[in-house]
Image 1 (cartoon, one colour):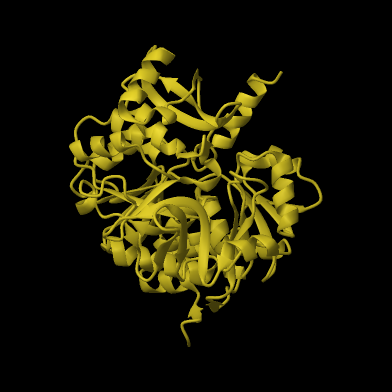
Image 2 (cartoon, one colour; image 1 turned 30 degrees about the vertical axis):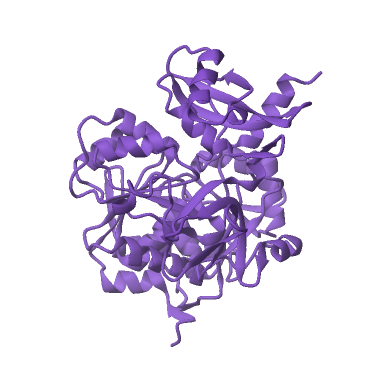
Length: 481
């Protein structure tokens, strides 16, 4: 056996620690032996429905146990999971299924209507079950083999299918363990979508580590706070919007058993990090993406004050560099980085050069090698020749007591070419003049938004990332002449 050819992960895990808890959902618990058994039942159903090794299968499902059984079942067969964002329209899902040449669409009972509207593909309900698990799983998997496909959130242009191999997931789980450590009693709370890399990677870690996953169908700040205060989980993955919600509702502190708040999903307002410090919340700020199979750079809590705002240093054995003298595009490399995009030769040629992946994000490295992510290159506002980062303005706005959330985008301006426009959700009334004065005290005048727009909510994708492109479109629609 070589490293490139490993035993069936779930089968091996069920053999090694059959009675250890694998999954907790609502009031039900599955051991690894039980998880394996449920997976074989699902694999039997899928196999009898015509799914074979090498098939690409769309998965449209909620964060429920049957989705986990299905993801694992596809691995037992050797089929590829094409993870579909359940918030997408029928048309968008159809496009992704066609792009991936998917043979089947697997859906749960919550998505029956949407699945029924998707034509030209064989659909299978994963809410159906076979009582008999007469399925022979494959014995090994190759590290170079495709395990999953996830489409980028499409913050710019048509989404691209990111290829993730078994080796990518293995390297990601290993790099995370080398950084965060492994505790035998770890329990990772998963409230992020399983169709997103932050959720899917938790499942891979669970099998490889022999670790319990506490699955939530939807994010619920109150319930999660209670669980963390009771010491029922040790790690949770969040984005800043989720963390802000949790911290604002938290009275008291979390259990000493809770050891890691893994915070990703883009630049984080410093005010949130300061609140966490006050409440002794161990925040590990992190940077990663679908193309890196989850985190690739992480900041340990001991540097949280000294390097406030940094996402840390690359995980072992990954590397990061900046394409430029000071600020520039962030380039990354490592065994967790995707081999490429599905059917996208042009994108592959421009994104992968000399062993480095071009992330499309702007950042800088300090003298100690800590990475600071400034913004998406596509979101950069160039106003009168000056570079303006929306995330910097958002961070200032969120620190105002009246502001709950803020999103900034560039809008056309005859004099400057482009100027910042700020959309905000308020806790209580505040005027544009007050906000402009507040921003003017904290940053250069050219960065102060030219416009302030009050809104009920900000557009976010399923990963809770702010969709600034939609803010720009909203502005254009409102100001079309």
